[in-house]
Length: 297
Image 1 (cartoon, one colour):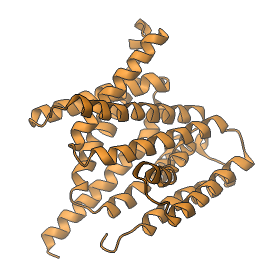
Image 2 (image 1 turned 135 degrees about the horizontal axis):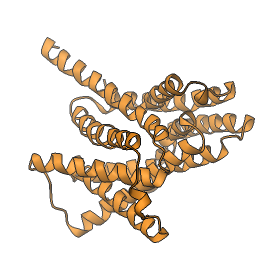
Image 3 (image 1 turned 120 degrees about the vertical axis):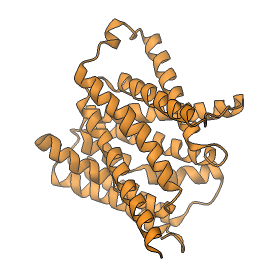
């Protein structure tokens, strides 16, 4: 391996972990922003989608879609809206540690969704991961039900994130990832706006947001959504899926550590939570290594 290749790979590896750290900061921002989960996701998707549109337009990469393609991508955008709304609702109902630990259930759900969607046999490794995950959730639940609502919302969020990831994996084979993300984000914003309109929540007070909240919303939409997605898409073209998967698995760990450093005692949990969380997050890492191919370095 030449020095140039090594330096390029190292640079992209560092960028990957930086992006994952930004993803991990999403939960922090969700807690800092005082808006409820639904309007929070509306502003995130609207601003994030608009930023990606500007970026694509500047590069002349905005692509036209058929009605069928738009319908398929928009459906996945609806799943994104549900995933993010329940994720932030989980944080507000409990804390960041609980929400991020539940999101780590995604590989288990994907392990069951893929055989159903792609009509393949269930892998024994997926059953093993599912068993460890359920053991972790049971450990958390059995000792303390204080965060019951947050845990349930987190599990729902993980399910929709898994469904989104599985269907997105199909779409990305025939469409540009950035254009898919653009349609999904705008769809999410439109769906949420219509929902709020029907609920009668679009009033003058809806647009009255504190300066501090606007700052955090802009960071969430522009840095933790638009920039993070574009940067991660770029490194995925250079690094192997295995390498990026290992990095993504560190997101809950990064986020929980950041939450402890920033919020202190608010994020400190009982020992049984960390035992359960270790089982869940550990199963995610185990899943990645069990599915490591012979040439994934």
